[in-house]
Amino acid sequence: KVFGGEVLLWNARTGALVRTLGRHDASVRFVAFSRDGKTLVSASGENGQIAVWDMRTGRAIETFDMDAELATAAGVVTPLVAISDDGRTLAVVEKRVIKAGRSNITLGGDLVVFDVRTGRRKWVKSESGLTRLTFAPVGRPFVGDGKRISQIEPRDDGSVRFRQNGELVFFNVDTGEVERTIDPGRGSARGLAFLADGDVLARFSYTGLKFI
Image 1 (tube, rainbow, N blue to C red):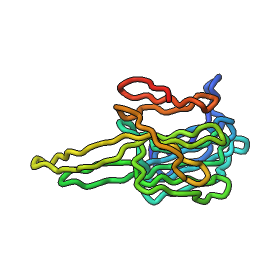
Image 2: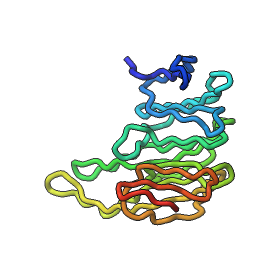
Image 3: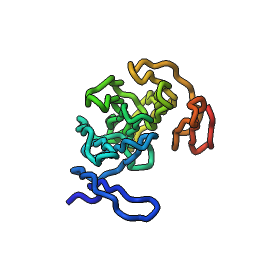
Image 4: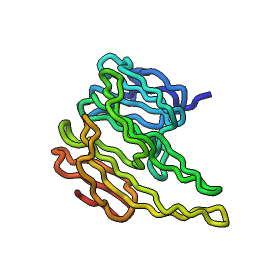
């Protein structure tokens, strides 16, 4: 039995159920509207199933079945999925597991970017290491926050020691070209969002809020 597999649309003012859009084959762990409100994306991390919905008709525009489980941000079960402001571009990070001795290190794997209108992959970045995603306003770079793992050293007790280097990566939305990278400082990102004009990026970590 699948718990929470249905995608339900509610009236925020009255609390009334407006419609049931459809269902996934696993629990839905992520939902988000595009900024224009015309598109909704839902995702199930366990089976890598993603659906994009047209809010005017209530019908699925496209569904995507990934080759692996979806990666999640540290400490939460929310899959790493993001939709562009205009609802035309979808970004997804697959889960990657590195075995080190008797321990596993879970990281962001392949970053896959889709054209929602055609259902085709625009580009892929292998072993991305990303832990957060966000889109800037249309025409601006797409940003991922992640970490690179190095110097993996298994210990006799089965645990593992390794070095983490954080980075903010700015991608060209259309080509996947890395336009620039920034050292975000200490702490894994807990939140990542552009201000409305797209000129300032807000990054929240356990060390505090930082504007970039």
